[in-house]
Amino acid sequence: MKIALVDSGLGLLAAAAALRRSRPDADLVLSSDPDGMPWGPRTSEDIAAHALACALAAAELEPDALVIACNTASVHALDVVRAALEPGLPVIGTVPAIKPASAGGARVAIWATPATTGSPYQHALIREFGGSATITEVACPGLADAVERADPDAIAAAVADAAARTPAGIEEIVLGCTHYELLEEQIRSAVATPGSPPPVCHGSAGAVAAQALRRVGTGRPEGGGTLTVLHSGRVSSLPPAVLHYPEGRLLLGARAAAR
Image 1 (cartoon, rainbow, N blue to C red):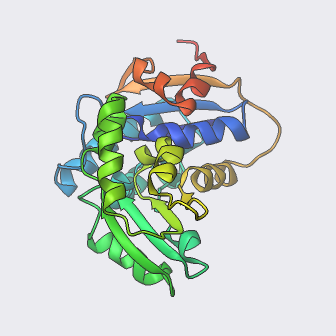
Image 2: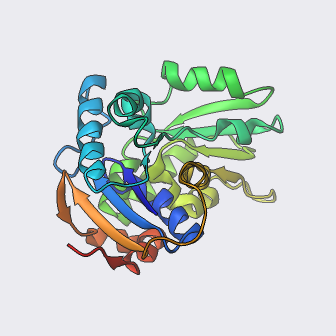
């Protein structure tokens, strides 16, 4: 079993780690784009082109499924990648976990990039899945970039800034960027109200991993648990920044695929 994941950078770590925990035998291909990142400020057409290039590079290694492990790329490139690769290669996108966060009618904050916050895409998801929940959109400028650099001071400043703009008493937080899933505990602590239970954070990694495994089947082990890293189409290795995150340290325990 081989599953590929595509993102501009470290945002794919959370879904890759979820896959590794569920199926240690699965071979993983991590295809990111350090030459072209960040994708967020690019036009929709540009994002689609860069995501497609990463997907095509991964597809050359013949995975059984491919995950677009990026909210921005799922918005702008999912249809393009599916048109290029399906039905031969199943392609799974990433959607913010607004539905489970809103199911109980709670007070919900959606932390997302400035480009996603207030976008027609996010508003459509809120209309479809928000139900009776009270939802606040919180833009998080600089947070994804800080995560990518594994800069603890920049991360702390960006988290504190977003937390200060998150209403008191929030019960559920949607992590609307896959990079943010690497900071779940830090975000929960920053938003917690003294004397109240900490909010529940909702990422997409677990659901995306489960969907990928459903698409390929969960039969007997067929892989060796290897890891292949592609940087803008070139065979590479995980950058030192991944050591800052438990998900990255987990993946570093995998052996490299044979060249």
